[in-house]
Length: 52
Image (cartoon, rainbow, N blue to C red; front, side, top):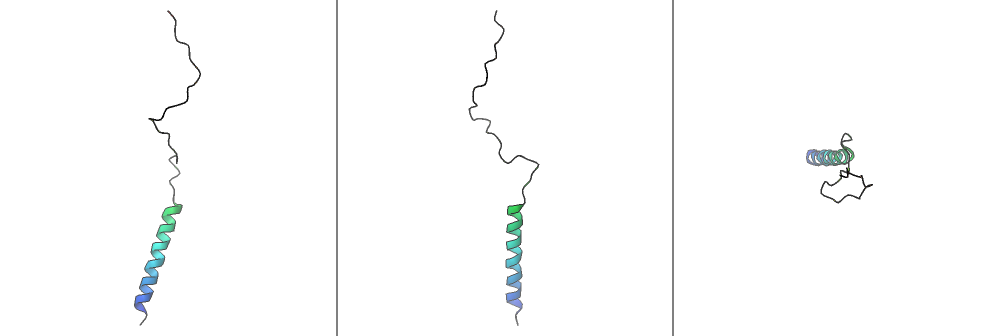
């Protein structure tokens, strides 16, 4: 009987579908690229302090 190939086929398709869904599913509530807090930042405009 063709029970074993049917089970293997269904399992293969299920694993394939789970992989595709996991690749497509992206959590859009968080930004994809987060800046590194330890990376050096570009110098901005100088803000003058209080001169005494």
